[in-house]
Image 1 (cartoon, rainbow, N blue to C red):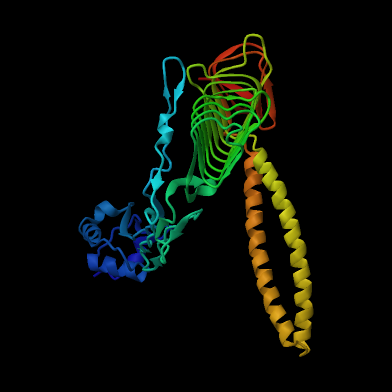
Image 2 (cartoon, rainbow, N blue to C red):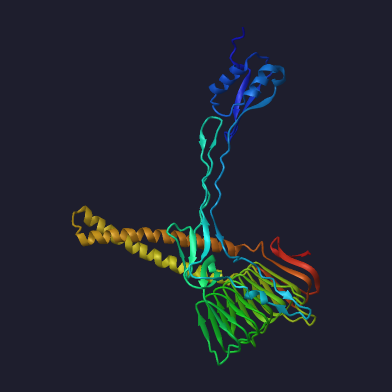
Length: 463
């Protein structure tokens, strides 16, 4: 009877992730039973997932196993839980596509399909993250499954959550709308049945403003929600925390400003200043204007023309035609986020202020600690010590959050690799393309081209 230990004929190899075990056989012939193989595995630390059918096959067909590597045990990989999510009972993300008529005008009638809500009505439900499912290594150790990432309501104006923070309700009748940072609000709607003129005056409203007419030069509308103009805008000032939609266009006369924290949509822009935190979408043309978009400028309707002025976008500019045959200077800049640069400057000032305050707090705490060690701490000073300790902790947390945001902004300002300028039809001489820190002047007409950063310069790629 062969009493040679099985270790002379084979080795057990455990994978790096400990989710599988392999027997590596050498050239020697051997005799063993499936039970002996299983005991050999257990002696080598394999406690879970042993495949007894494979062991029986090895014991039965030993000759076929020589020189081979055979998987004899498998663990169970852990499974991560699902992330929590919020289900809105209103379609707040819908992209309304205007109807382009034969004469090129844009029909924005769909913008009047508002998300109206009654007081006490359910707006959204929150579904929590689920737990992960644990795994098991072949050596018998548990591999914890990660719990999904939870989410929470970003509560805005005129909404309230239940005690368990699982449901969100309206506290007034009004319009459900998402504003900056996806805060959910219910805004009452203010309607003007005509022009914004001397009969109406300036409007400053905590909600959504609908103008069923034109906004004349010199007037101002400020809205905490959206602004919708069923007409045109002259050299006026429009400010919205949400989006601005204009059925006709903006004829600014180099006066006024149209500024939205989310999107601006209209038919045309001429001699105007327009800014959007996200996208500016124009159907017909952008002429001799200064345009700033945090994300994209899209001008690709039946004309899709950009001529003159300066167009700045954080990510992308798309147009059918850029410039004209008379070489009107037209500047297109992408990878530009002036709002982020301003925020970075404010963050640096805030970090400096908090750091100085933290130093003062540390010095005061050091003095109070010395007094405590000497037994000289009065009740008032003890209370001050507790308050300062709490302030120190809160300041450290705030500094950590601010520095994290600063790093995020600095990284995004440096990276223009995903920015582009897309020309659907033609770009004319006199146009200038700027991507990040790099510039390219257009000297000859070019058709169907996209400009991107390539090897440290503004390159052209055919569409």
